[in-house]
Image (cartoon, rainbow, N blue to C red; front, side, top):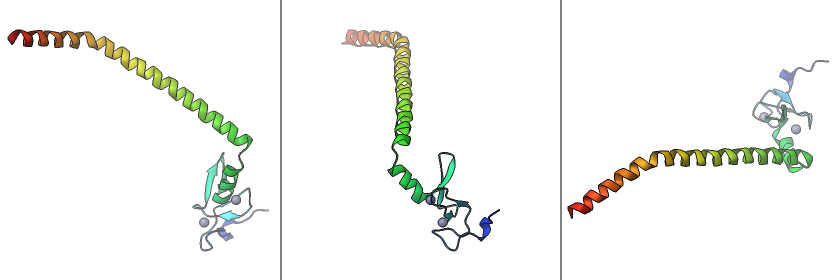
Length: 109
Ligand SMILES: [Zn+2]
Ligand SMILES: [Zn+2]
């Protein structure tokens, strides 16, 4: 049986047509009230409930965040050392120049 969404109204907005049905609470919602979460559409209320009762799902999510932070940290450290390396390569010339400049300045006194 095919349900016609056009005749369904948003649970929060009676004047708006529903575009999707929340798989958790089975209510219909408009585009504004429904959000995508884990490759499925879910209403704001159920999304809130899911984030409050995370358990295993959240542990995996935190693990992914930790992994991303770790990779980002390694990248930042690598970039930092890369900049230092570049700085050391370009340093001798400027050091030398400033030394000459200082010597000349002292000599004029
Ligand atoms: Zn829902
Ligand atoms: Zn709505």
